[in-house]
Length: 254
Figure (cartoon, rainbow, N blue to C red):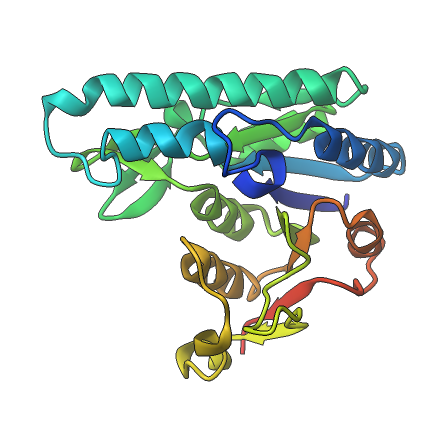
């Protein structure tokens, strides 16, 4: 069985400059590609980010760090909007014949000592895959030893990648890879270049990009790992066919 874990980043499924925007056209185009791959026998686990749905809400209530009771309504609103986005993705992809099986991340993950802890056995996910559905999780507000914490889609990618050891893991965004300061795609990014800061200081870093890179480089120790644009179907298809993409960044663990 060929298994792929794929993260649909917030910028891949929404326009982060416009609250509650949804890039249905990009999702549908990806869905067509996945449908072809599934017919060939491939299996997928999908993870998605919050994008312009959850990020403004989490920011408004300061959920990057839980402090007191006044934030609990923010937990409710953020959880609700993430569930809403997950349902939009489910309906879009299911209407194309993809058997999406959404899992509420807050029901299967907690965070202890700053690390994700899966509350179900990985065999449960494997059993879903064997039954032919596509499990889908997402970044969420979850219980933690600090009260509540945000678990990112990148955290889930790394944790499930370590547990399931997929054929390849693919981070999808709205750009064709990690870009240098001149806007060119960095074809390969290694652990040594991250640790030595010989490359990262030349990357146009925004938001949580460094954390994403660190997660991807760690994941690369266990599986082929890439960052591509969701709209670059040719490159994604090459990865699914065990070929190297033309316009993506591959992460290497050394």
